[in-house]
Length: 143
Length: 332
Image (cartoon, rainbow over all chains, first blue to last red; front, top):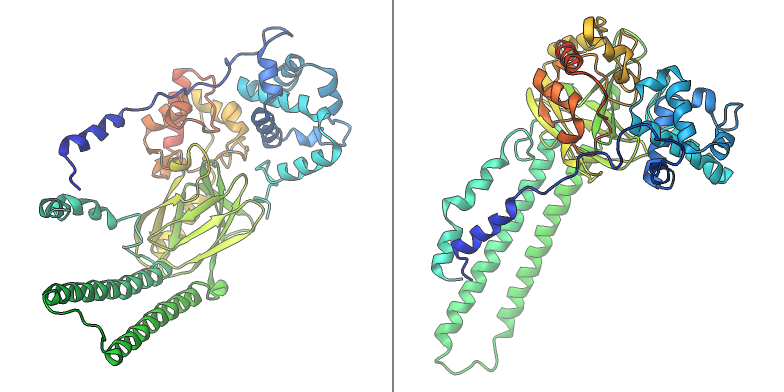
């Protein structure tokens, strides 16, 4: 078999950098009114919902809003639409101002998902989330 | 393959990649007990298999050469069975001997690697996360844990038991100069013992594909002398002074939701501990070498440097970013 140098050089044409989108999937602003089309993209996307769940434990939301407690958000998720939930996270909590918009969207999407999942699955989900790094008392990954 | 192509294959250019086989991320330059045993096994396999390969090639060559010279003569219709069966017996014996050497070598090495060294071991907790490493040491002066990230310090001559955990997906802990790989599996307690003895900087890397930034999930490993290690750990245990001026956003702004700076109000646990971030060698798990500029860039536009990272771009002004980067860089 004979490799011509020209054929080898041809392979170098593949060395161009691929085009990558580095921005978030959706514009990074708060909702524009109750009909904002981004709401569907957050509450119906499994990745966005699960990220919201992780932030929920990272930011210690479960301290007041643990499932089964008085602050359980499942009924709020059923009653309010996503832009409303966004506003109450961003403006109703002192720490809300610290959270970037994309994460608030995801948190609101997670809360919207809570009434839709059955109790057994919610229990499993809560157990998984206990392994997420949170607060000064967290002792490490689930083992 | 003609002769010219064969020559090209043997040209010096072909061997240039082999120059990468020594250095700070290589199993061929062992710096620890476990890596040395594995290197020994690798060499044993190389020589046993290499000798068998050379022997097969030589015998093949001899038979081709003999066959060519005998073509003129009449074909042999009744070969000498006795010589053939003696040769086959010898060959089978060599295969058994070769495999016995390999399996014994493998058993000896496995026995060494799994040996019980827990009693004198230094316990280090390493937790894999997309895409960085949380590293925790027991506080020698107290009961708690001292946390750092993406930089593992180990004392030379002492076994460290690295307890591995994952909070999301499967990762793999791999520092080839010091030991082999060990998978990091969510929900499972894995551990690997390492006994480094050569002082220096090495490189570790996640060795199990774990998502978009798997390649940027590296960490630096420093093997210190025991005195250096004790001094380093004592320095890591010290809290940081509070920031002043525009840098206060690091403790009362968005950064504090995910990052801890011990001694200040920043107590988030989701991201790496930043108490002594300026003393580390790299930013964002081996993505950039540590400098004030790298910190500025990382804070301003993390998605451009490490697309997919969970570090979000936050709304800070240029002056705030510069002040935060200066504060973090001074946290040696």
